[in-house]
Structure formats: C-alpha cells, structure tokens
Length: 447
Ligand code: NDP
Ligand code: 2IT
Image (cartoon, rainbow, N blue to C red; front, side):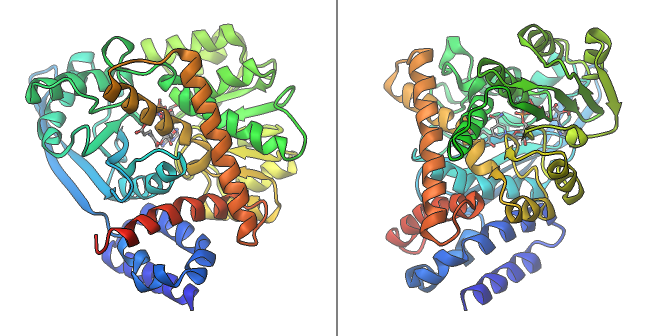
C-alpha cells in the first residue's frame, strides 16, 4: 500500500513537471527508498507528507540582464528554488553552468533537504543559479553578471530566510561579487552567503570541507571492514573545488589519487597526484582557469580526450564533477577492475542503473547526500560563527567537520540496519534525513 502511494506521488511529479528528468530521477530514488518509513509511520501517510515534500515551497525565476566587455547586452535566467524550510532557513548553493534549468536545480534542491537534515544542523533545503557560463568570461563580466543576479535575488534571501553558497561555477570570486552587491543593497553586514573570504566573515576549512568530508566519510565506510585509506589507489573525477580537496586529504592519509578530469577529458597519473602537482593544478584551475589537459603536458601523464576516468583500475572512487557521470556500464567496469568503495563528492553522480549495481554487489557506497554533506555542514558552522561574531580556529572547524561526518555515517548505517537493510547507505541516509524533516512538518501543521 505504501509503495502504491509512492508511485501515485511520483506519477503526479511526472505529470506536473514534464521535461524534468533529473528532478524525477532524484524524487524516484528518495521516495522508493523511504518506503519502509512510510509503511511504518501512519502519521506520514495521514499528513500527506510525500505529496507535500515533492512540491517546492517557493520557486523564483528571474531575468538577469548584463553588459559584456564588447558593450553588448546579454540576458540570462536566474533561479532560486526554496524547497523546504521545516527545520531551518533555506540553505544551498548556487550553480552557474550553461545546462542549469528548473529540472537540475529542483533535483539539487530536493537532495539538499535530506542532506542538510543529516548534518545535524538546523538548515532547510534550497538551490539556485543561472545558465550563465563563467568560462571564458573576464573578471569584469563575471562581476557585472553577479551584481545583476543579486539585484533581484537580494529581496528573496537573508541570514534567517535563505543563505546561498557556491556550487559548480560559483567559487570564492563569485561569492565575493555576490556578497558585495547584497551588502550595498541592504546596507547590512550579515552572514547571508557562506563560502565568504576569510577576511570578511568566511570560515576556515569551508573551502576544503566538501572534499575533506567525502574522504572522512570513506574512512568511516572502510572502518566497518577494519580497513583504512592508507595505500589505496583512488580515481577522482572533476578538478574543481571538491576534487582538489578530496585529493589533498587522500594524500594526507597516505592514499594515491591517480586521475582528475574536466568536461573535455581526464588525465591518468599512475605515480599519484602529489602535493606539488596538486598545488600546480590549483593554480591552473583557480587562477589561470585552464584545462586539465595541460597537466598531462606538464607532468608527462596520459590524457584521454572526451572520456571519463571510470575505466582506470582502482580501490576507491570519488566522483566529484557532476550528475550522472557514472553510468551502469561504468559501474560494471569499475567492479570488474576491483573497485569496492565509492564516496560521492558530487551530487547524484551515479545514474539509477549504476546505483542499483553498487547496492546489489554490496560494495561500500556512500551516496552524495551523505558523503558530500561536509560542505554544507561547514557552511552551517560559518553561519554560527557569523551569528556569534567570532571565528573558530582551523583545528576547531576541522574537528567539528570530522565529527559531523562520523555522525552522518553512523546515522545512515544504523538507520539502514533498523529498517532491515543493513549496509544500504542509500536507504539509511534517505530515511534518516527524511524522518527528521517529516516529523517537523507534522509538528508544524499544514505547512
Ligand atoms: P567546480 O565548478 O569547482 O568544479 C566542477 C568540476 O566538474 C570541473 O572540473 C568541471 O569541469 C567538472 N564538470 C562540471 N560539469 C561537468 C559536466 N557536465 N561534465 C563533465 N565535467 C563537468 O564545482 P565543485 O567542485 O564545487 O562541484 C563539483 C560537484 O560537487 C558538483 O556536483 C556539486 O554539486 C558538488 N558539491 C559541491 C559542493 C561544494 O561545496 N562546492 C558541496 C557538495 C556537493 P569544467 O571546468 O570543464 O566545467
Ligand atoms: O551541494 C551542496 O551541498 C553545496 N553546493 C554546498 C551548499 C552550501 O550551502 O554550502
């Protein structure tokens, strides 16, 4: 009966949101895996929690006009999906990428609800962004775009209402321009964005947090089998914020990261991307804004144009680029090559076929909403520091981040067991994240 309810709800999602495949994919994965909780708790069925959960509280879509360096008017589309505020102010990143559309931001906002719930901190779920492409744009163009974007967004956000942050295409530079414009418009210095610069309200470790967190989560998964990261050969995709700090933490723990990628291809460096090569890559990607191919030329590694790194033999994989980057076929290849741990730094990087394969083969599989929750968790710590008008040391924030990742793993692991699905961290994370939000929605009446 509860499965019927879930399928009816998903049919409504499909009917109401035609042409939103990513959102339907995320909703299907979550709803199907929380069936045991829907079955067990009549109060969720009576309060029609599922039907309410899949409908965002508010969606804002707006025009973003700006002037490029040639003096031409450009127009992009801006979004903010305020999905759920049952347990705290809306919280989630902004993505600037040409593929951005309602479907992608709704999948990300939906995932964010459960991820934020898992962090143990009081944050609701949201996501936003634009189809603006920062690639190939000058700093001035990026600034003018960010100022125009914020000129509309500012009226919808606030430190107790909605606190955006970065995601793909939105890093320190973009957060700086966005924050500057918010401050001018409001005449207030508040913690309205996270991922801020360290001199103006940012938290130590926020830059590192998602990557570090994904590795801390992997450590916890390995511990259940009495193993550690030491000596593990790791395949990493992406070469942006999450990939960079995943590799930094892997190096610190004695593991060996052998790949990185961008949307053009991937590099394979069997000797490992050590500290020096990583520092060079950070300059390439964060300052010079070049392509990963240059790494192969610089360090005599192999470059594979137009391919993803999943064919490379490894013990552990850290997908850290984008959604659906691991297909069912990739998953099969990875298992054949001996990969037995996947910790998702990206959001929904594995397609449904791939997830099914990882779960049925019972490898150590940490889904994004658990494994990459360290980023938003540290955003939550940045919000606390802003509210208290003080800043914690690097060690203090790292210690809190590490403890949060341990707790998330424990919660997902124990919840999976409690609901009769031992080892299934997809079900464990979804059910644990869901029940907290669902209980809050029941307590607060018809919201
Ligand atoms: P960045 O913009 O810093 O880096 C993104 C990386 O992924 C780049 O190497 C980029 O290559 C590659 N990439 C992006 N889109 C595609 C695509 N369609 N196909 C192939 N490669 C692609 O973003 P982040 O590192 O911040 O984000 C990476 C992932 O982690 C995303 O899924 C994001 O949602 C998730 N995440 C990020 C968090 C954060 O705190 N930043 C927190 C939690 C999750 P190219 O330069 O060629 O575009
Ligand atoms: O997907 C994510 O969790 C993020 N991009 C980080 C969100 C945040 O508010 O720090």
